[in-house]
Length: 208
Image (cartoon, rainbow, N blue to C red; front, side, top):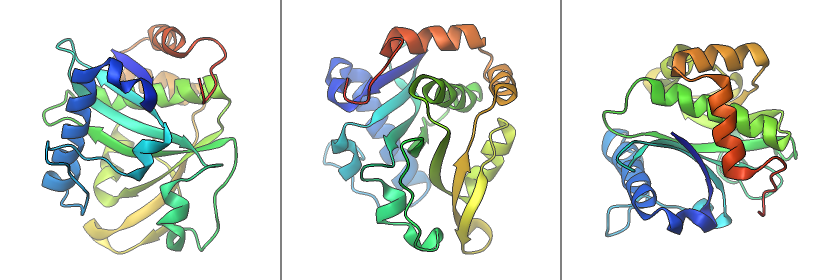
């Protein structure tokens, strides 16, 4: 199932929390070779995890992490402004209707529908919080995944060639996109919305 958990509440779900950060280390350091910080216990965390982001997490029936992403409003500190300004031509992205999506992670061996479920959940957050777009940084290896689940971004800027190319993209989520992604995820829009409302209520607030 999909869970929506603010960082301050993660300790209520220790198994889900621990497996998420360990899967992040496995994906970003071991599989992708990124230069990320990993704790002695094998967890990948960074400074943005301390800013009370909203995590969207697919939780398996065993209580473990299957996939996740991290969301923060661009009116505060975000990676795209602090580390990737060279990809936006130096233009700062700061808008209450644009949130940053980072650390999109799939557990090793995750079922194909998990990526689609996370994208569907991103749409629920958009609807619930009044967000118009997500901004995120991605590499060339993610292009195929985005295309497969029907959620390709509008490119703001890129650098590099081939597999080494990295880009900043903007995602919107229209009603027709929601239905298409729901079909790929094998979830009904009604169930997806129910999970979201149970987690954050009808009128969520970032500081809630």
